[in-house]
Each structure stands twice: as C-alpha cells, then as structure tokens.
Image (cartoon, rainbow, N blue to C red):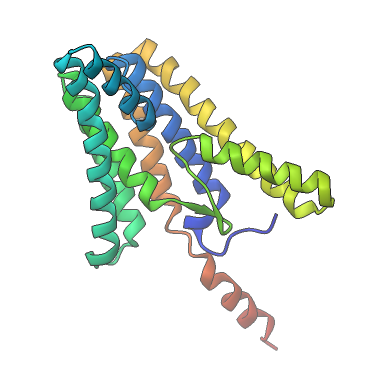
Length: 228
C-alpha cells in the first residue's frame, strides 16, 4: 500500500491513535467503575438498564460520559473551523487530548474522570476519521470490522488486490485497538489511576510525528533531481 501524502492520513499515526483508543476504554472500564470511554453504545445501554430499574444514580453514572463524549465532538469541530495557529488543527486536538488524559490521572471521583476521558475520546473520533482516504475509527471497532469483512468479501468475489489490502488495513487497526486494551489493562494493574499517563505519552508521540510534512518531500526530490 502506498504511503499517505499527509501524515494525519497515515497508517503509523492511525496505529498510535488506535492503541490510545483501546487503552482509554480498558482504563475507564477496569480502573474507573466499569464505564466505557469510547463505546458509548454500551454506556447508553447501561444507562437505559439502570433507568428501567429506577436507579437514578446508576443512570447518571453512565449518562454523563455520553454527554462528555458529545461535547468532545463539538469542541473538535469548533477547533477545526475556528482555530488558527502555526500548528495544524489536528495537532491542537492531540495536545488537548494528551493534557486532558494527564489530568485524569489526578482526578479522584470516577464520574469526573470518566467524563474527561470520554471528552478526549470524542475529540479523537471527530478528528481522525481516515487512513489513505478510507473511513476508519480509532476509538471503536464495529465499523472497522464491517469494512474489513466487506473488503475481504469483495476480494474473494473480484480478486482485486486493493480490496485485500483494505481489508488487512481494517483488521490491523482492530488488532492495534486490542493491543491498546491489553497495554491499558497491564498498566492499570501496575500503576492504578496513574496508568492513563502512559496513554497521554502515546498522544504526545502522535503529536511529534505530525510535524512530518510529506507534501513537501516530492517537491524537494524533484528539485534535487533537476540539479546538473
């Protein structure tokens, strides 16, 4: 598969973001009271279950992260449309996400910690939606699994290698998400609430590699080739 022209559309950045996505879900579920940071479908389901049982506190426990996730999407969109700086808007989002997750390590109430984590996830899901022009999710797997199976089926029917590569791309992202969950659970077992700082470090690494400007490389290569 050819390399993406933009680093924000690249496989390597997608891998880091998927690792972070799996890490956040494992952290919030294992260390912060069984709430999903990313899988808001699960939170909405559990919110409904507690509502049906008249457990208002339980309902709020799962409803607030959903609202925080939605707020993260809105903030990411506002940064995209309104923010202007020397940094790319996605770099700003990654920095905000890393700072938010670092703050989570020092937040004691689980409800507040889950809201901040879900807010960070909302920003990520809104900001990183493509790899090589293909729609992807770095914070959940259901859409990636559907796309993976569709592409593998198309490959079996048409024998077009492009479908195979796309299917493997989606399966690879799912594997990275799972690896992030493994890493997250391992870190929780050793670091407790402070484990989320490791995820913040992953996002700092993502921020750093986003300074790679691939769009300028072909021009420089052409200039070099044209020298006598």
